[in-house]
Image 1 (cartoon, helix red, strand yellow):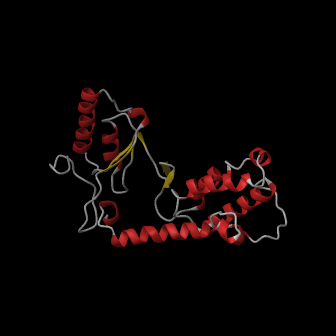
Image 2 (tube, helix red, strand yellow):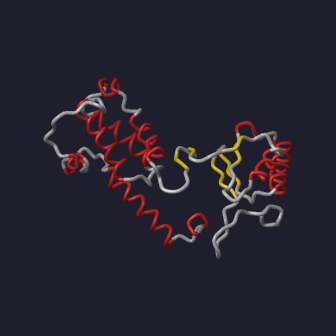
Image 3 (cartoon, one colour):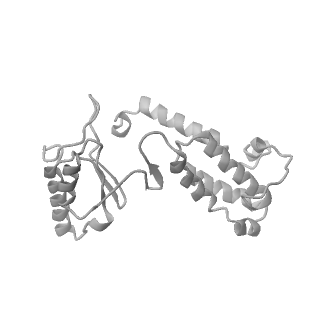
Length: 223
């Protein structure tokens, strides 16, 4: 629709094309300029698709987001065309937080809360000292890889809770341990437990993303 000039895309930096959509499983994001014509054509396209495929859009579970340059009058006229709620940032998309500006504590804390909720005390009591590192590796590696842009204070706080869980089976209980945490993060072959240093993990993921920005000739990275 954008290629045939039926849909006006959002504005983008000079020399770059703005993204038109993101599609992952059942999550679908469409980016377009805040005009009545655009919304009508998007709604019409979905209705035609639904009549052919039988897959219908649940408008009551969909949201529409507006940029800062869209006036209240435009918002009112656009919202009257379709029964969608007005979405606001921050929000969670595919488990990762979406927000505007610098990441604040109120945005990042849900990441830590979601991770730490998987280390309930009853789980620690039911696991042996050899089983807790396995749980830590499976939870942390899978959770933080999708939320890599976090401040060091968050990684350090989560590390402290995980360290408590490893030695006491509870995130809130502390214990004097003579084994340094960086030794626990060594590979098995070097006498460690094979755990991940969250600060280093976060830093390595950011460096990998930076490298992709520089070297990849891919639409997502060039934008």
